[in-house]
Image (cartoon, rainbow, N blue to C red; front, side, top):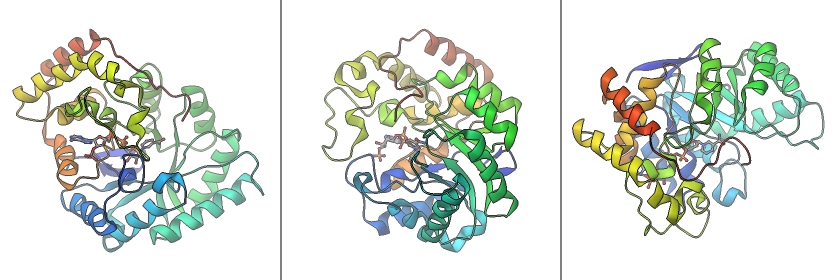
Length: 320
Ligand SMILES: NC(=O)c1ccc[n+]([C@@H]2O[C@H](COP(=O)([O-])OP(=O)(O)OC[C@H]3O[C@@H](n4cnc5c(N)ncnc54)[C@H](OP(=O)(O)O)[C@@H]3O)[C@@H](O)[C@H]2O)c1
């Protein structure tokens, strides 16, 4: 698969979000299925794997997902780029650096590794970003992490952090129906060699065209019950965007999910989406979007048509 750079870290241009093997989209598969799906993605050219310390069933524990990712990638660790994330709570005990090190050491143990490629602060939790940046800088100097990043942040915070320790990546929500980062954040990242890693790039499944107003989501640990574009009324309202994707999918002999990914890959050179799926076949379908290349004129007509569609539902950068 083609490669892209997150500052100095080379990754496959499409990565793999591993969260759903532990949390967020209802029932989780057997661990052996999940591990094999991760290894299968690696065999198909994926070298970039996204996890977080909090990804556990019902968000009730710590480390379920990191353990799966660590075990799955153990044999190919040097060729894999592993990104994980931590939360720093305001009332923590010890300095920012002490707490950060404690979280990192625990993550490394679960991931069966002695370094993390990309370490993100999952959310700004009231800690000054400069302090986090300083501490991350020291972890980089010591070789414990190769780069660092922030998630769900605006350009002011990014700029303050970047001035202390250059960032490798920003991970924000971004898709054809969540475009807040286009105005200032992605251009800032491009200018400063920061990778931009969209999470929920298929809008939690909406842009696959497989969800209808009749689709029933699961009752336990399923974020689709509150994703704003996925209320019954908004699924119907967003149908013109799904129809547009279906039209291009037919034209390009691809799937709607693949078109939604190839759209963002064409649009920005520093974007590396991490679609999430707990299904082995759909994981490969998403990775193969790397082969679905839009021409400039196809991209421009898709973009023009998209800009004319109203989006129903908005999550944005605020809140969880
Ligand atoms: N930084 C953050 O705060 C944050 C927040 C959320 C997520 N993330 C990271 O970003 C990754 C991706 O986010 P996400 O899982 O919300 O992304 P997503 O890919 O937009 O949504 C996942 C949902 O879409 C479905 N789907 C994916 N590909 C499909 C396809 N080709 N055809 C049909 N349905 C498809 C999945 O169903 P199936 O499983 O049934 O295929 C699942 O229900 C996560 O795994 C996680 O690592 C980070």
